[in-house]
Length: 108
Image 1 (cartoon, rainbow, N blue to C red):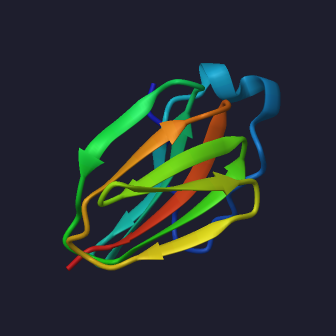
Image 2 (tube, rainbow, N blue to C red; image 1 turned 45 degrees about the horizontal axis):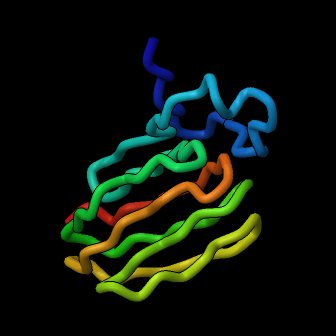
Image 3 (cartoon, rainbow, N blue to C red; image 1 turned 180 degrees about the vertical axis):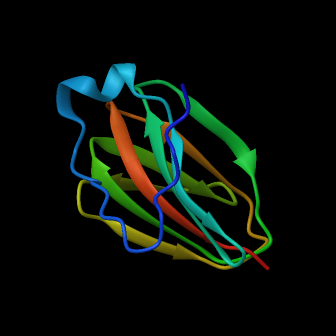
């Protein structure tokens, strides 16, 4: 069952999932005309294949370890790490350890 989007003014949690990570799918917390916020869940060994979005994005690693590849350059993200990426830049994410991240996309 899909998670409902947060309503304006509604509080949601982005706390680490811990033992619930393996049973939790990725889901959008909100989608508005200019903004989408997604909790991406990446179990160890799972890859989000290379892709790009038109608008700028931010990625904050909430828990675990993620390899974030940009144009063949891999950066390792750990809990608390934050990354900004310009629009149109191809990237790929791989869970090194069970991980989740908060992804914000500016929709253009």
